[in-house]
Image 1 (cartoon, rainbow, N blue to C red):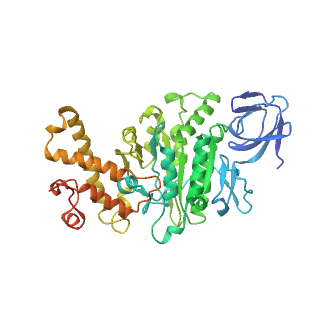
Image 2: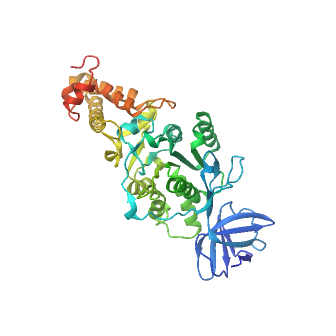
Image 3: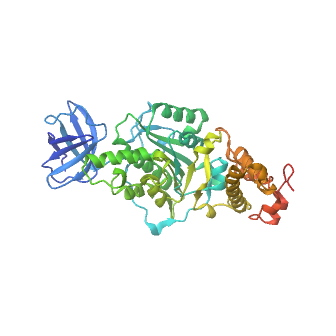
Length: 462
């Protein structure tokens, strides 16, 4: 079937161009836009009997209504994938930007993917070790899970993402079949440089596929970036039997791009100007995580989003929370105290954690230690609030011990260097060490056998 080519545009509106009198055009079809022998690429985002609306990845600046030619290619946006993508850096629509050659051997895959049949989904199990105590010990990441990080402007989510990328690993026999897909949307040049140089220096780059959409890249390209990244991840997981961790930062920039496109299309806005289909659009991305019956590999997701004005009820974190299985929330208060990573323990959770920890997965005491640390730190917050009203001198001895525990927990357990990679056993041992600031009468979540084996009182605790 010959490719259809049209000369002239009826309208240019922001990142969109409108072509009239089109025939047999498909939704999501890829388009070549040619102006004065220079090619740009676009995608059909709306089609009717008489016209097609095309989003232009490289932007519409400089296009002319009368001279621009539009060629419909009769296929959806695809990228070429193979094991050669490991160690490479691509732009937001999957073209190499690291100076290397194009992918030679490989297969083309539609970036929109195919939905996983719910009946063939396997329940996520086994954990991924990030080397970060707060995550491994208290909100463990499970293979096939989607566990977002809720951050805010100025909080070190990119540093945390890089640390996870450098340190994440599997334990046991499958440890060699692990890869990371890192997709960044709308990030600044210095952040991109930091990310790439960190991967290079650590040697982690050989197992990482990086997709970068920079702040000055076309906004519309951002809409394709997570889909392109997940297409590469699905190929490695389900065709090459690898366990793949996908890190998407910053999903807020993605949603802003979606809002811009929706406004340009003249759609009726929903909450805070975002399109009414924001929930289903985010679900189409997040639900591409998982494990499939009969396949060895898995896709695990850590989407990162910066909450506008630190508002967890904002549509982006709010809808993300409905779709995903927990959240990791970064805390400004802990950042002010100099704790890195500043992970707020109490508002964070991993809903699948219980199925991937304990005997046979991490260590038999893990579920009880985790529960005890949560309970004790919750009491710390209550005690600090009380101390701010009546003063520390008026607190009971038990409350004063909780204050000591709280300080030790933040300094020793939560806080760790950016190059500090802790094994899960070390994380649990540190947990027991800080619990040593509390008397055994307060340790109601661990059993007597565990106390005899691992508990050691610190300072004047009795």
